Image 1 (tube, rainbow, N blue to C red):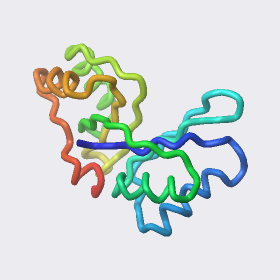
Image 2 (image 1 turned 60 degrees about the vertical axis):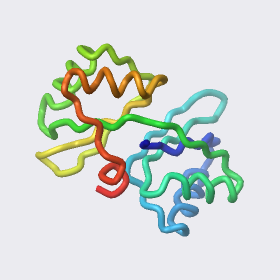
Image 3 (image 1 turned 180 degrees about the horizontal axis):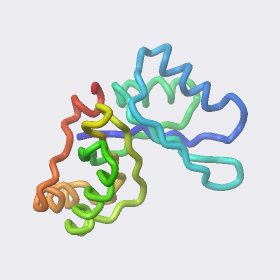
Length: 143
């Protein structure tokens, strides 16, 4: 299973740096980052990191509210229209997602699209039926 680390974060100067400092100290590499503003000066920071379980542990030990959330990561072409082609397949599969973000892996070759979906098993099945492969955890965390 692939996880993102979600942190409830107050929108104040230095708060994001506190997260990165804790992860740096624990030798955890950030692979993807997505920060949403929610309301009243708070937001949700979603991270794909090299070791999500350890990240959750060290962040919580340092007074931050961190949770693991299962995600689906699919590969797409890193070229103009690559995301459009992928989204056509996701629509064909009938998969709707709440949040998403991407990251280039090899410029001009491939990129990853991170999808936050309620029903992961159903989404995996539907995506597979239209020929989309779920990226292996080792590649998501280590590539």
